[in-house]
Length: 160
Image (cartoon, rainbow, N blue to C red; front, side, top):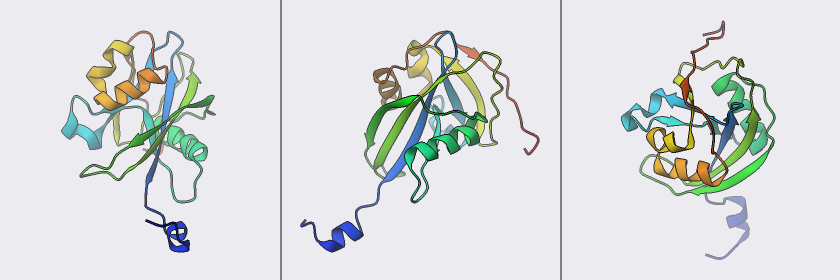
């Protein structure tokens, strides 16, 4: 395909995903159980994140999704990885931007929206139990090693 003016004005569509690698002090990684992925159970868990809107920078989308998905007001520490995700029958081709969300205090309140059922901080060896193989591999390569595994209480905001 030649790179005509039309190609640059109407490039192929790709999804931009943003993911947060958030740790607790002992190194455990925050994962959430997604109600809309229960068909994949027990692999219905994932990192906090979502998709960028049209004309939204990945870092801006990351901040928005971390507030929406965990009730946390964080700034990303650094970009850990940009991961290509091929199209499937149910999802568009795209790229996931994985940002380091830093370490949160043990008493930090995590507030989940209705679409997320619960959260946990998991050890690296437990990633394969919770995440798809691709997600677990990406997280480990990006430095997702961590500490203890526990189930946190589900907190609710007044608006839910």
